[in-house]
Length: 211
Ligand code: TYD
Image 1 (cartoon, rainbow, N blue to C red):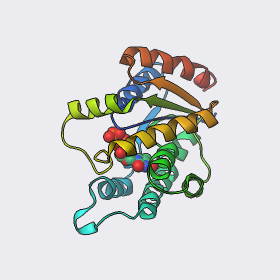
Image 2: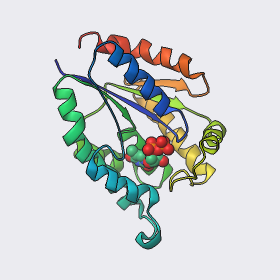
Image 3: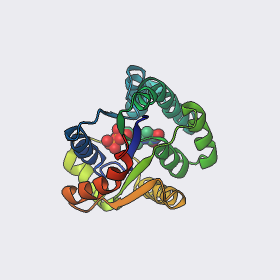
Image 4: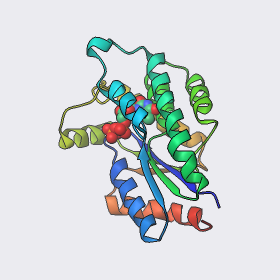
């Protein structure tokens, strides 16, 4: 029986990590093999690419938007081939922070690239693998900024973008969710973590019933 592929999406500071940890714990307590992973950076190659993407600049110079999109796609190709597909093939449940939708929202809606071009690159990179469920934690730009500030530690290259960029990314995610409502569960990231978790498992339980 093949496994299940679940992704968490949302702006920086929406609470993806907390929810994916809670979901992974819940699944493991029920005896499932869980592969908890993330993009960018879910493989050794991806860790290097992540460094470039998040902390580039300096001698690397300013990123060209297409180069940036291709680096995310390269990370994804490696990750899907080496981690996600093998896990699904052996019946595990993959719980992943960020996937194709992040590229569509950040590189497409957030930057100036055509969303359908960005989609095509990622579909080629992954051989057309889409998640069974994508949980979008939708945070207002104010809430996300507050959480990023509370987390401290300075902003990475994308977090440091202007408020308009984050607003465009948020609108991009919401538009994707509307177009693909069967795959998406949209939740208000301002809800308490345990309430969000309850809603996530209500949607996940029927998905894993046969695994
Ligand atoms: P992430 O590790 O999820 O950071 P955070 O925990 O702060 O949310 O993601 C790193 C950054 O990379 C984040 O700002 C979103 C961005 N990103 C893209 O722009 N495109 C992509 O395809 C992915 C996967 C991430």
